[in-house]
Length: 86
Image (cartoon, rainbow, N blue to C red; front, side, top):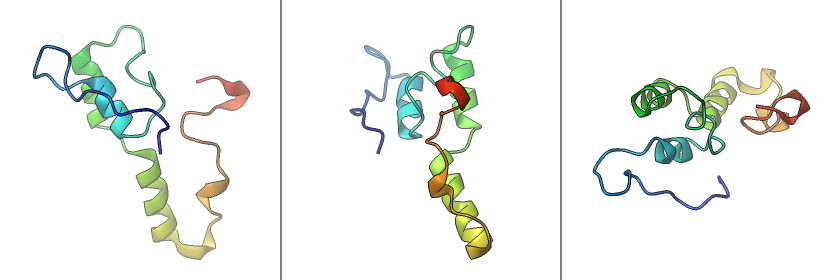
């Protein structure tokens, strides 16, 4: 699904949750949140924890709106923007 190998769930040598692991579990592009300059680990985890898994949201919208709305399958993958930039 993500085409990336699973990451370690904790930061090396600690029992602290890895923000990169959360980002991977949500199937977000690598670095989508974790490579944003100026964000602490706590801020990264807060942003990830308060966000929505894009594929899950698209599936829910498809179910809730039924057949009257075009499918989300034709949309670009998560994280893709015009001009190929994030």
